[in-house]
Length: 316
Image 1 (tube, rainbow, N blue to C red):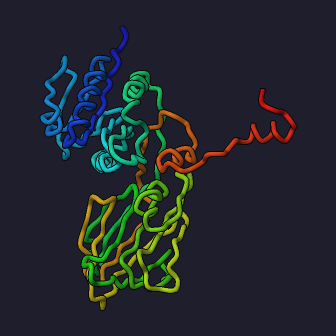
Image 2 (cartoon, one colour; image 1 turned 120 degrees about the horizontal axis):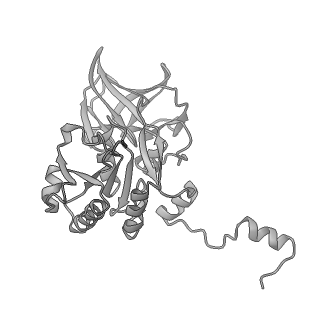
Image 3 (cartoon, rainbow, N blue to C red; image 1 turned 135 degrees about the horizontal axis):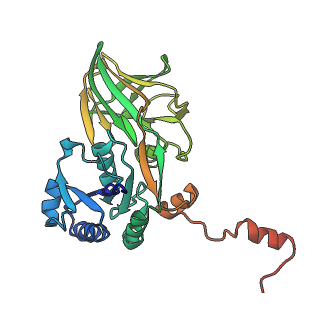
């Protein structure tokens, strides 16, 4: 006697504060359940969407109940902020995230609103892959006591708490002091986060396949204050000097925060658990940069056209 196949299940997370997102989310849930795939929703989002159970295929959960457990992927409907929230909710289970962008740039998203039908079709057919993205493990120490620990997919930023005060810090790489900065803050980023806060701060764009950690000062009053790219095995540290007049604050992915008193030490290293992003297409990262930032590439003819020109061939 054959054993019945286990129920397929997808966690759907949506930015339900927007009517447009609610409409797309309802359509996705109805389409998935029509194909016999169970859908899990956060209870408050299910209420916002006004979705009753559909043939026993819609279930609800709460953020504290490990929402990604038992799900083959997470369908995230919203912008990059929604995807970062999804990474936070599912980090313990490493459930792959598939973003449908209804935000602005949507750099972490794989699909746009017009791609919803083909995205659902790919989920149904299991026609997708998942790639691991390097994360950061971040901890805050005051003295020898660990006051706070978390992870980040994009970045951990140490920032001044008061606008009128600079933050006095010493930065360190692999246990060795590098420089002292009076600054607005310091961003420690991943390659995935290189196109987010790091990019705005003047840091380099790093292809996601590159394994590295980034450190970028924010408005540092110092001779040596350049963006740095270090090995993925390195440990970055930022110490808020005890005699600084201003206090600081740590932000991780713009979502999790903790105050930093003078004397606090922030250590950043490669995360033990990556975040997995679903890919539907195998387009080069260069194409993603061009599309997301609307980069001007008019006039580019490509290698094939150049070879034809060099060989004296003409267009028919």
